[in-house]
Amino acid sequence: MAAGESTLALPTRTPRSEAVGLRYVLHRYARNRLALAGLWVVGLVVGAALLAPVVAPADPAKPDFTNLLQSPSRAHLLGTDDLGRDILSRVIYGARTSLLAGCVSVGLAVLVGLPLGLVSGYYRGPLDNFLMRLTDALLSFPFLVLALAIAAVLGTGLVKAMIAIGIVFTPGFIRLARGQVLSERERTYVEAARALGARDGRILWRHILPNTLSPVLVQASLAMAAAITAEATLSFLGLGTQPPTPSWGSMLNIAQAYLGRAPWLALWPGLAIFLTVLSLNLVGDGLREVLDPRLR
Amino acid sequence: MTRYITRRLLLTIPVLLLVSMVVFTLIALIPGDPALVFAGGEADPEAIEALRRHLGLDRPLVVRYAIWLGHVLRGDLGKSVRDGRPVREVLLLKLPVTVELAVLSLVVSWAIAVPAGVLAAWKRRSVLDYAATTVALAGISIPNFWLGIMLIYLLAVNLRWLPPSGYVEPWIDPARNLQMMVMPATVLGTALAALVMRLLRSSMLEVLGTEYIRTAQAKGLRDRVVLVRHALKNAMIPVATVMGLQLGGLLGGAVITETIFAVPGIGRLAVESILTRDYPMVQGVVLFSAVAIVFVNFAVDVSYSFLDPRIRLVEERR
Image 1 (tube, rainbow over the protein chains, first blue to last red):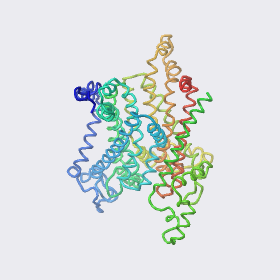
Image 2 (cartoon, helix red, strand yellow):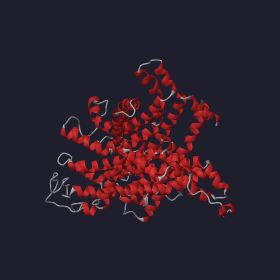
Image 3 (cartoon, helix red, strand yellow):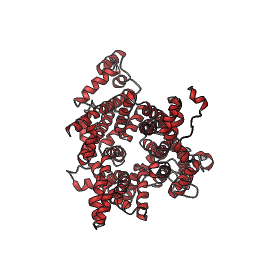
Image 4 (tube, rainbow over the protein chains, first blue to last red):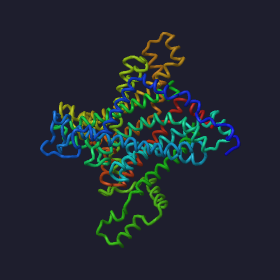
């Protein structure tokens, strides 16, 4: 430890994080009605996913051959599918799949992308050069085409789909974190910390990281929305979640075949994806408005 | 100018090389022995070994990559495992279909996005602005495969206005072709419209706050002239620079749109070859789409430097 550090406490909180206190953020966020509505819907979906066994009226995987393709009724509020399974229950359980896919794939992208971006931007040099060219290359692929190709290589299944989506999102987080570090590392508080003898690791972890978190949070919420759509797309194409696990994407895949006879099969899972993704986008936009200093 | 173009072109070389490495590695990582797959389960070990040597699978990965890259540079993308047709030939056959879909989708998206973006910025914080931005957000959030299915249900199954799916070449029956492309182009254009509209709105807001717009207004020019001739022209530059991004969205979106509407383009080819494990074809499609985007980005950068000489000057001084 450097001599100065024992006598002089390093500032653990940074200027901007002080200015943007949690209460201030919440207050500003709450003023945006659309963002607040988005948060409510996201909360509702999370609640439904967590309490699925309690709130779902039936077993989502249990076929009932006496009730095939029933239109919405009192017994089955959203109708039944081609195997007589209750659609409401499948939509509720499908929320689990979608949220899990969103959280895991974005979590993976942040866990890999954030440290790589931080190190790349802080040290620059050949590693930075290589990583930037690699992210350039990865960002040149159409998002869905790359996710599909990776999913094809890894094989079918929810876990593999989540890994594929996570890989596709990683370059975006590397670029974002690196960009933040590049501007933060020149600021006075970093210089001060360095002058006080703080090591690189401490500067990155305690000082720069907290200041990169706001844009990462915004990007993560928007990426969650995109990841949920991507998982639904992969499952729709038969490369994601496999039956009998309920997933909104695979429900839509089945629905295609019964569009003329049972359109409700396509309506509800699609509406669930749309509302969840819209709400996450509203939350992301709301967070950006509060956390992005350029918009203030 | 030549110096700038050369410099920019040189910068694309490492990106293209890395793109090729990613594509090659992706397929090389597939578990299982390709020789075993080719030879079938019944083949004897000697035959498999011979096939492995023939396919070059006994060589190190780096050597295999160099050989593959050499073929790719000569335009040889390999042959389809499914029907033995050259990948390049199939790609070139499917390309015009996807290009048609992409152009029509661009027309749809710009026809919606430009007026909506301009009006939203002009009437900032009005009901019109809120309505346009909310609809745009909905457009971004709506999964395009669901929108496709719903349109098929409404316009094809219910109202019977349009054929549900399929494709006819425009030179065989132009009217039928357009009829069949309405739904795919609308689905693909909607998400793009939302993206372009949001971008154009913020870019217009920035331009509308500048001095020269105030001068134009002070001169007594009509709103329409100020908006279209002065503001829109400059506000479109940032929108045009994300053409690469838009193309990425279109190619990615084409995968799903072409599959739903049975349009025989590159997107549907991607899904079909993935589902049938036709890896040379997958490799070809993925490589082709990434290279297309790299070149569109290059073209946009160069044309941008024509439009805005400041960029060229800054780059040349480096």
